[in-house]
Length: 483
Image (tube, rainbow, N blue to C red; front, side):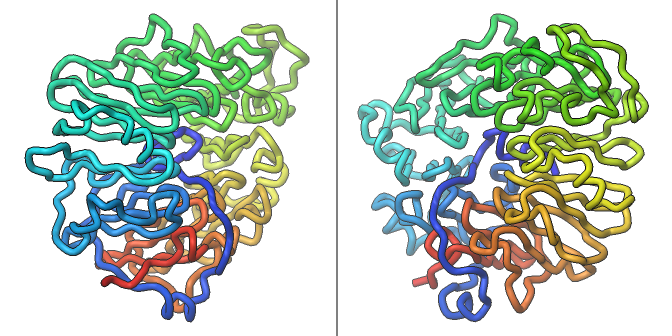
C-alpha cells in the first residue's frame, strides 16, 4: 500500500471518534442497510475511491450524481440544507468531489453565480459561518483537506483554510495551487506546486528557510518533515516527536549511520505518532524521534544495533544482521515501524504493544517470506510470499488470530480493523475489533474493488460499484435506504 494510506501521516480524509454498537451481523444488515450504486471509482484521499470517511460518518457521490452521507450527525452524517434539496436531483461536484476531515465534510458544487463551497459537520460548519461574504460568495476551483482542516483556492491563488484552528486567508501566485497538506495536533503544513511550504495554525512553527523544492510533506503528532527534490529530508517541530534529527539516539538508522546531514537520496518517509523513518533509493532506512515510539531501532533490535548510549550524531560500530542497503519498504503503526528487506524478511522496532516486538513478528511469520506489510493504529499484517497472511501487535485490534486464508490478493489497514480479499472471486474477509467492522459479513462480499475505513465502521465497494457498510450502525455502519 502507498504511504499515503498511513493515517499517522495525517493526509487527506482521516479517521476518528465515536462509540460502539452493533457488529456485522448480515441479518441486521439486510434489515437496516441498503445497497447503493456509487459513481465509477474516482481518485479521492488515501483510499482512492469516491467514498470519503470522516471518522464517524461517510459521504459519497452516487452513480446518479446524488450526494449521500450517513453516520453520526456531529461528524457530518446528515446533509446540510444547501445540499438537502439537491439530494433528490443530480448535483455535479467539481474538482475533488467530497473531502473529509476527522469530523466533517466539504465540497465544491456547480453553483451558478453564488459561492460554491459547502461544508458540514462539527469542526467545519462553524468556522465557515464566520467567514465574510467576500469569501463565501467566491467561486473556488481547488479543494484539499487534512484530518483537521479544509483548504479551498480559486484560479487567482486566493483561498482560505478553515477547520479546528478557525480560519485563515491565503494568497499565492495565480495558478500556483496547494497540492499537498498534512497536519499535526497543532498546525497544518501546505505545499504549493512550486515546492514552497507554509504553516497555518495556533502553534505556527514556521518552516525552515531551507524549505524549497519540496516534493512531499509528512507529519507526526507534533512535528513535520519535508522531502526535497534533492532527496534530503528537513524535519521541524517538537524534537521528541521527530522535529529534529539530533535528539538523543533517535538519529541512528538501521544501517548505523547518522541521519543528517549525511543522508541523501531519500525517496519515502513514514511516520508513527512520534517518530519518522526515511527510506533511501539504495535501500538504507533511518529513524528518528521518540525512542519508544519508533525513533530508535537500536533500542529494540540489539542484534542489529549492539551499541551503548551515543551522543547525537555519533554512532559506534554496528554488527548488522542484514546486509547494508537491504530495506525495500517501511510501514508504521501509531508507535512502531516494520521494514521489509529485499530478501523478504521483516525487521520491527518501537512499542511492543503496537507491533514493535521482533520476537512476536517472527513467531507470527513462522519462517515465511513477506511481500508486503501494512500497519493499522495498533498492529501490523504481512502478506506472505505463499499467499497467506500473518499479524502481530495488539490482540483486540487485529494483531492476533488473523484469518487462515490462501491466495490473498490485497490488504487494507484501518485504525482498528484489517481487510483482505482472496481467491479468484476477490472475497472479502475482515478482522480486528468486531464492533468496528472486524467481523466478516455473511454471506461474503465478493468482487471487491476497494475498502474504506472510518474509525468505527467499514465501507466496501465492489467491481460493479455496489457499496456495503457494516460495523457500528450509529457511526457509519448502516446506509439508510434511499428515499
